[in-house]
Image (cartoon, rainbow, N blue to C red; front, side):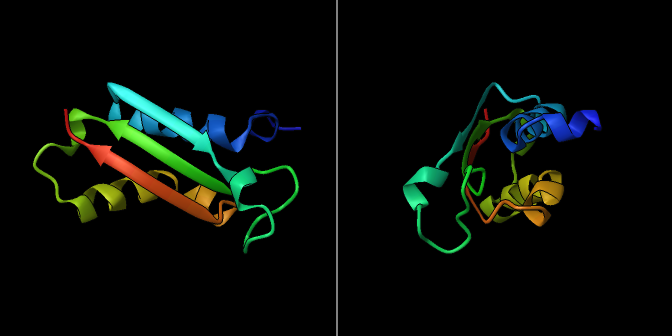
Length: 92
């Protein structure tokens, strides 16, 4: 089993966002349980996430550009089981 297979989606998201943006604030919240029975939900969670992030890397960027940057970093997770991602992002 590869090391990545033993990490949770949340851990991979935290690592990717930390490496890409060196945030001063970062929270990755698994909100899957509050979506039980909704589209994309599955037993065990890790389907619905909220990211709260503050980073100097976002300075001067539009909200759309920031969301694109975050989605690009999390592309593998979004393609492999994350159904929904809420983003709260701002610059330092």
